[in-house]
Image (cartoon, rainbow, N blue to C red; front, side, top):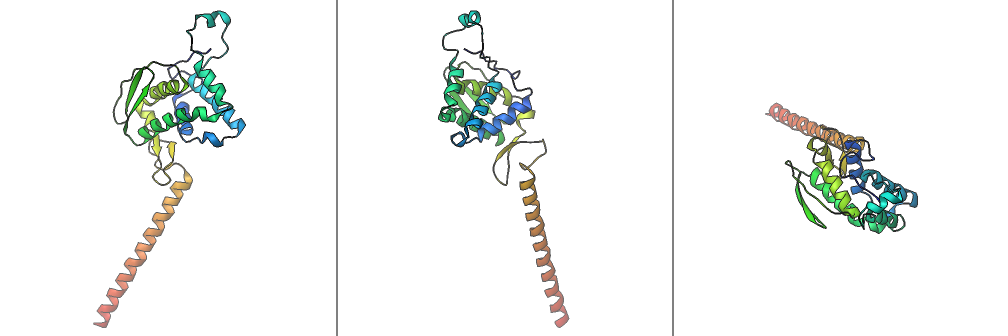
Length: 207
């Protein structure tokens, strides 16, 4: 049995940490994870959802039937990563929508989210599966637009990343590659301009 807090006060200590986790999860290839990495990912999911697994028998007796589904899903995922496919797919769609400032609809057991990353959104939710719980928590995170809009798509490599407000590229490699390309294009343009000027000067001299 477990309880889940649908707020940002979860095992991950800050909203930026939670958003960075979503970006990593969105791009995770779970089918190729090593055993240790898969176990770590499942633990990260527990931390993200702030799941409490070890409850007393007395408290467990008060919990509704079926509230242990998320932990059961995670335990299955520890040996069968395909269990995470739908969750990763959902997170990818959320991250993509926010990074591209788009709109998307997400349905779950008893409701629907409408995510408009270009405006403030109102959300309601119910449900208790792993996928739904991640959806609820992720929606809570992306509601804070100042932080959520730091999720971006690199214009060079198209990877998603969580960066600074004015950061355009995912890292030094892409930023450096673009700078080199611009420098070479400018240098090439300068050479072409210089060549045209020389030809013009030669024509005037011949004339």
